[in-house]
Figure 1: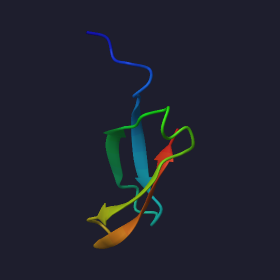
Figure 2: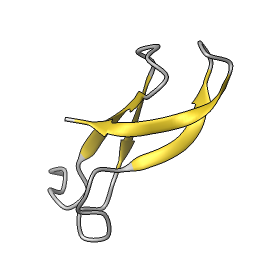
Figure 3: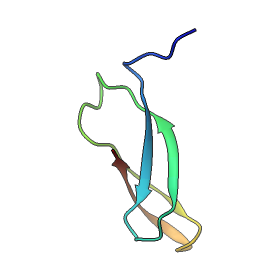
Figure 4: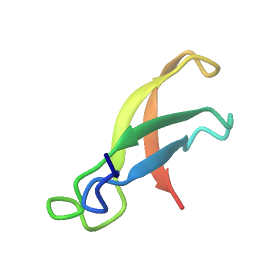
Length: 54
């Protein structure tokens, strides 16, 4: 079964500058802009903003 273009796989990169990334899927219809989530960065040992990387 083919992957949908409506829910692409995106890479979330830490804004703390550690280079840590999360991989997730997003819905383009609900979130057409770049996705930003507050998640845990184990290298920085704190919750930081993760921004969608293209």
